[in-house]
Image (cartoon, rainbow, N blue to C red):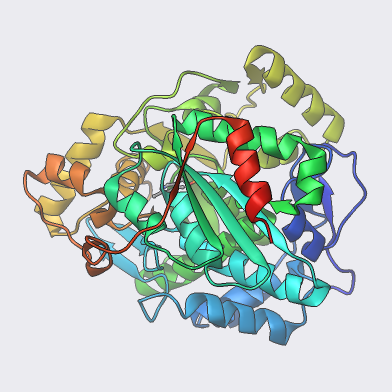
Length: 464
Ligand SMILES: *Cc1c(COP(=O)(O)O)cnc(C)c1O
């Protein structure tokens, strides 16, 4: 193992290095940048040894070089985090319809965000027990992130969580997945406004540094490095399974993308030496990222409402991490680009001969393509794709090459998006006992107006 521990620095280059534990508690760097590891370990000589490991052992092996936790403690955290998954393999791979689907939705809220947020919740608890501190997590959600975060920290000592959702504007099952959690440390705030109102309020509260420090506010959004790291693991796991199953020596991944978190984890796996020949980035109509990888221009558009709402994002919060490497690990150049994006809503990278990035291909799947892919896949093979996964499969199937296996990430269980499934198939073919059991469950939420002061008062009155 490398003797020098990995530390974390900001993409904007204006902070001193911090440890993994500090990076986890910090989330965003103090200079507004994102934290990155000081080195990406090359693990090529360990791939053979890792290839037969069960998921939890593999997770501990992949993450250990990046963390400052004793191996036995990391392993215990990993085991506890994935014990909540309902499939013994954690992330099983189903070979169907000419592709390989890695199912990342067997966690408590039936979306892939559980893979990272179950672990992050346990890491927070572990680090707070060591430091004796408390943490008050604050976030806004349009659905999946909020419920996965709530399920990651429910019932935990030293942690309270405040999640704002727009009242009456999240799907019924998403709302119930949040409000049916009755643990005392969980505060669901049902805000009389839009998701943008919720996000604006959260941002304003975080920007109040006195409040942020005084109340020990923390964030659960996808910029936390521990979330990215937890997601690196399933790229290894799925690639090993598919290489064993097919005899292939390299693989491709198709990744439905919103905040660039999931696909950035794949990019890290690639940099570590996993034989991924291409990452195929898939967006819905909110195509800022697919346009970037085709043209080099990253230009904000307006947000469209689609059948894959967890990808209805224009500004991808993890993109800055990728961009930092793309500009040659030059923090000053990165700062210039981010300033230009803040000023003009656009930034530009000059494509080279291999395109913007020879390792990343990109495409888009609109509403019609999403419905058609769900319908066709179901008709051909009886396998039901959720609308996010369908976007990835649609684009992935357009980027097959040379008989190389295409691994498509399945990011949610179809029953979570049953309205889209009904629209595609024409009948109600998907249910999940966890979701069905929510009907009629007891719920708790506090209704607040879309005013920063009202939310601030509530949070200040209920912090630990
Ligand atoms: C969050 C989410 C995505 C997008 O993941 P990013 O890391 O934001 O790119 C895709 N599908 C589902 C179901 C999600 O919840």
